[in-house]
Amino acid sequence: MKRIALALFACCSIASADERRSGLLDMRPEAQAMQRDDSMNPGMLWVLDGEALWNRKPAPAMQSCADCHGDAAASMRGVAARYPAFDQASGAAFDLSGRIIQCREARQAGPPLARESHDLLALSSFVAHQSRGLPITPPEDTGIRAVRALGQSIYMTRMGQLDLSCGQCHDDHAGRRLAGSSIPQAHPTGYPIYRLEWQALGSLQRRLRGCMVGVRAEPFAYGSPEFIAIEAYLMERARGMEVETPAIRP
Amino acid sequence: MARVLLRVPTMTEKGSVIEIRALIQHVMETGYRPNAEGVLQARDIIWRFTCRYDGEVVFNAAFSPAIAANPFIAFTIIATQSGPVSFTWEGDNGFTQTETRHITVT
Image (cartoon, rainbow over all chains, first blue to last red; front, side, top):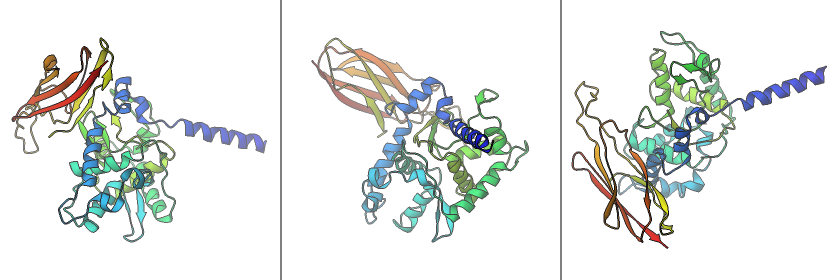
C-alpha cells in the first residue's frame, strides 16, 4: 500500500511538472513564429543595441562592460538564468537590471541607468539573451530563500479593489480566459519581452505593474524589494524551464 | 541611424522566387496619442518603403499611422541577375535610411 502511495505521489509530481507551459505555447502561430525567427523578432533590435552598449565606453575615461567581463557569450552565459540573486555585501537581492544599474554606478562610475530606459532594457536583454535555451536555475542560498518566501506571500496576497491575488488567476484559472485574453501560467521565461500591446520591449516589473493596475491595486515602485521578491518566487516556480529572451508576448 | 534586421539570400539560382524580410526600429507615433501632459504628440511615422533591385523599383509600400512600431515587411522577388538590392525607408522629420545587400545569381 505504502509503495502504491509512493508511486502515485511520484506520478502526480511528474505530471504537475509537465503541466507547466511557457506563454509562448499559448500564442497564435504567427506570434510564435515571430519569436522563433530572429529576423522577425523585434526584440532582437534591443539585443543588438545592448551588444553595442556592452562594447562602448559610456565616457572616454570610463571602462566598457566588455573591458571587465570580456566576451558576453562566455562570461554572461547562464547569468540571467540565476537571477534574482542575493548579494551578501549589501544584504539585499538584485534582479538582473538592478545588478546592471549597480555595476554602472559602483564599478564604471558612469551616468546612472534609469529603470525601463532604453539603454537598461537593451543591456538586460543582451545579457539575458546569452542564456537563451538554458534552464532557469535559481540559487539556493539562505538569503535568496527568505526573499523568495516574501515573494510567495505577496503572490498569494489578495490586493486591490478587485481583491485578487496573483495565484487566483495564474494558479487557479491558468489556461482559461479573462475576457478576450488567455490567462497564462505566469512563468517569467523570456524577460525582457517584446509585448505587442506595448509595441516595445519591457521588463517583468512593467508587466507586474500592468497586472497590479488591472486588479486596481497601487503598483510597487520599479526596483522595489517587493517586485524583486515576486520575481525571485516566479523564477523558482519556473525552475528548469528554458530562457527565451527576447520573447514575444501579445 | 535606426537599427535594421534584413534577411536577403546572398546566393540563389536564376529564376527562383526569393523571400526578403525587412524589420526596422521606429516608433511609428500616430499623431493621435496624447502624452502624459495631455498634449497630442506629433506624428512621426515612416510613410514609404521602397525596394530596388539592380536600380529598378521592384516593391514599394505606403505606410499609414495604423502600422505598428518597428514595422516588419516580407515580400518575394524573382532573382533575375546578380546585383545590389537596396531598401529605403522614408518618414516624417526628414527620416530616411537606405540599406544595401548584394545578391549573387548563378
